[in-house]
Image 1 (cartoon, rainbow, N blue to C red):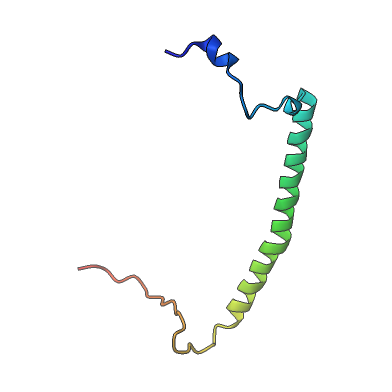
Image 2 (spheres, one colour; image 1 turned 30 degrees about the vertical axis):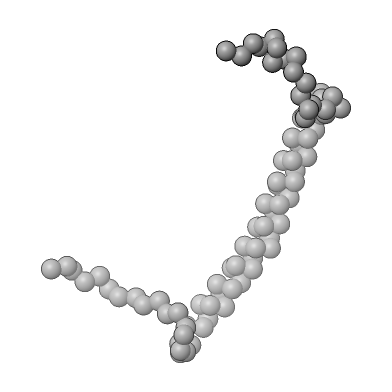
Length: 83
């Protein structure tokens, strides 16, 4: 069984006393993190989703295009009863 007091006295090589944070510092870091996440989400919505919407519009306009060799083609078929 591990002696708790002996374990507490063992030097922690990764311990850095300068990294102790106050509650205010933790709250500030959390706020910064939330702001960065919000900005990333906004950029993603503006850039990626807009580009995706644009490419989908272009693809829909190309419905009359004849498939070429090696093109991947999606086939649609009405449901046929089994049996």
